[in-house]
Length: 223
Length: 290
Image (tube, rainbow over all chains, first blue to last red; front, side, top):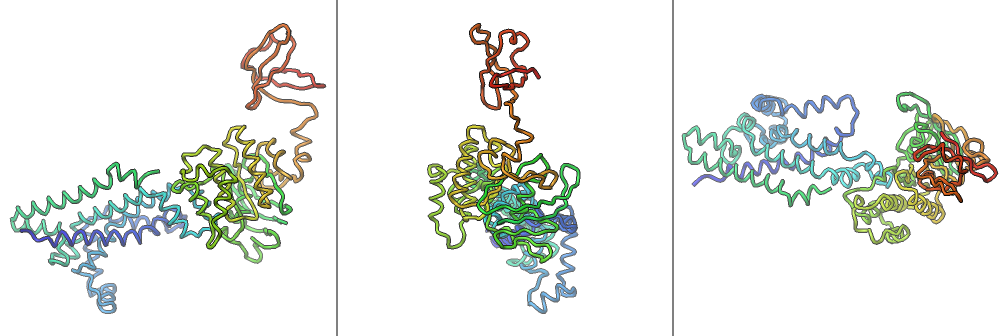
């Protein structure tokens, strides 16, 4: 019988990461879609870095940053009592950074497509910028929001290099399913590797199938 | 009283110009803003709305300062008592007609105004429809109704009827006139359509390159240029009737087909599709080929 904890941990990580990315991604993408600031290209480049950077490079820098010897690591460890290196919290932070472009880019593209005049109409009807974002812009960028959620979730489920670098292989803490598969293959335990891989393949395919199925598209992406 | 004296550097179609609208309008009047493309008509509406911020100047509405460069006052658009009907209506596609109107309700505002407006605009039957499934005229009425929910002092209409056919235009002009009087509004209407301006406007602001070059009643503004004492119009010959009793051309003028009686000998030099000018001299039509 296989150990189910890596699978549960993976989806827990993906869920928390996606929720945090929604909270960070919506205002960030909204700002990027509206801004003419000279800093915009710099922010866009930073957000997109994880797309091109090898996960091990990102993982290596995060590991250095999370280490108790660094200012950030010691601040979190000593002041807040949160260990980032080789911990689930560290994995969440790493995953949020690693999957950031997968949430921000679809959202930014979706927000840019919502006609500016709709926001102006909302302002002229007495609504604030925040009310306009949540009541006008987001509902008219539903398909992009859904794409962002699915991509961020799927990308977090599939991550390996970053997790290995900053989380290692601690059962119930950082041993996500991709690490578990690697571990089982290393131990030549192909049956378990097959089971984990099959479950991961099946569940992720199902999620994507449900999201992209025509029925749900009609509900979510209508208009 | 609305007092406008603003200054804003603008770029229009590649060339820069300074917009300096300066005028006063009495409360309760319907003012048409008229002028060539790129004259700054929409920008003027946006300045009044608070969507465009002038560099300098002052805007005062009923003794309340909405913008004053010297005193550093710029009332937020949300705090200006305005209703805006945008050129392409800007209805929220994710909301149905009723929800579009309800969106505009202020905290604690009596909801009964929604039903009143839906009924005034004859939209009650469509209230659960999404705007994209409505005709242009219906969408225009929704936009107008939505702009009135907050019971604004000033209604700003940016060529609201330009996308509609002529018949519908005439009907919707009646709605605009009705709400302008019923709600005691001060209305600004950007329009290129002279019949529309004559029908609706108490006065016209003629804008050229950002300056108000003339202000007055439609009659005084247009009498020297566009309206001549003799009737003159341009049209296309649709068909030619060479009936001996009453030879005539059927001419398409604007969207209307007119029958113009002509002399039998005239017919030979014209063919269908010709662009002609019809001039009325002492009530007798004269046809000139263009």
